[in-house]
Length: 181
Image (cartoon, rainbow, N blue to C red; front, side, top):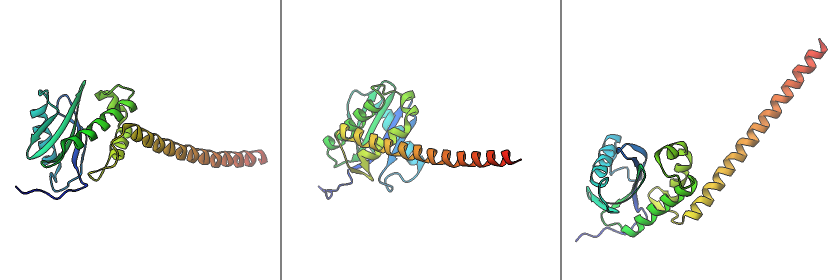
């Protein structure tokens, strides 16, 4: 039996589909696995067809190990190689699901997910980077995402404040020019 070398690149892909099998989010970390959008969508369709009526949490499709979870009208998938440890993949899936549950205030459904897509991408990026698992604790992920959101908001607020200051000085200069007339 040909055993692959251990690797930090555990996750091959993560994707979220709606209850019709339509892609809402996908990130493929192994560019050689499914290089084109068409191949990715075919793979997702194949995975969805094999899993959407099943009661399991794990599937083996096209030589890949897939762990998945369903919530109301969403399907969450984490994909690894055939030799990958299912428990590691399940830890990623659970972290993703619980983190999104906290961000979406336990309202893990299609509409809410689409309304908060920026936060969803932040969560995925905090858990996985290039196929390497960075974090599997949802509390740590939420903490990091909240920090990043606050940091971005403070930068936006300070930029707006600076723009407002320059606009106000322009208004004041215009007012002084008007008074001189």
